[in-house]
Image (cartoon, rainbow, N blue to C red):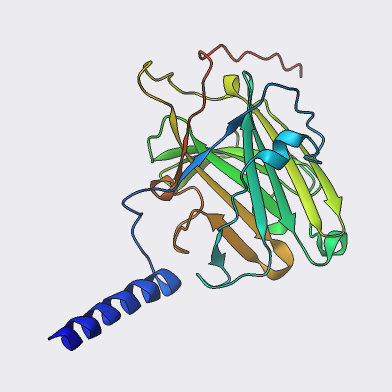
Length: 251
């Protein structure tokens, strides 16, 4: 009897692993939880992540390969750290590349560049934790900006532009990207005193020369990093009250 149970358990485990490696799999019952560290000093957004606060923040490294094949090992490692202060959410990423600057592939330097033509690192936020909507902030190793809204992973609005900042720094081992996303550029609700804010969040990277796309947390290849039902939970941010976001754009 024990032998039969052991064989059945092994078969079930093999099926689960095979499904994640080769096909669709459901969102986890408990989403991964990550935290942003609050800083008291000044973060200079220069693409170098040289402040001590960046070094003290816990890195997120367990990405999942979506392309060219789902699952398994991948070549291009990525580290992400999060900080915040009273005005901004800061996201710092290091995208490793064994060829360094020679490995960079960027063909489009416009704002809202074509996704598939460039190396790219991007972050998706669901500040209302709706699981059906996100805003995406994107950059290349040359620091050009892209942003959009996505609805239910199918409808995308690339005409949406927010006020935010990103700087990058290319090195012999990869490139850094440093984002400052003002809270006033996002729509959210401040939770009650007894509750903490919970946002959906995903990260993704495309290494263009190998067309290797990785994502955190794991999302099936048949979807995209905008599929927020698979998102991690960003918790613990002390949010300021929502404020007006007004800008004047001469033309």
